[in-house]
Image 1 (cartoon, one colour):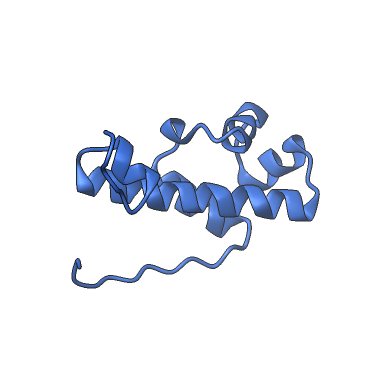
Image 2: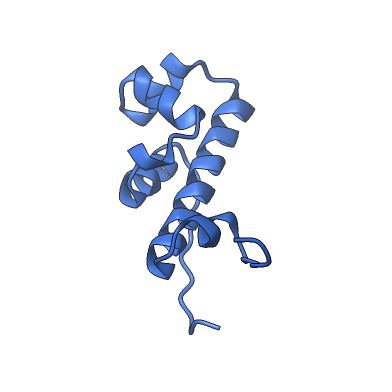
Length: 93
């Protein structure tokens, strides 16, 4: 890959542009949820209770296991804990 430039790490590791875009959004949601949990100083057990999931699921989220979470699951989790989410749609560059 020497000499190639990518706009994001997801574009570099995923050849399908649609999948790379999904990975970008999933990563952003995961980061926002993780940051919120840390800001609130919730234990993983408390976060799990608030999210309505098992504690190992929170552990997976906190460790960045992106492949274990769908976009809709992360979107739901974010909204359940009070994060505001927006979707903007426009023409591709």
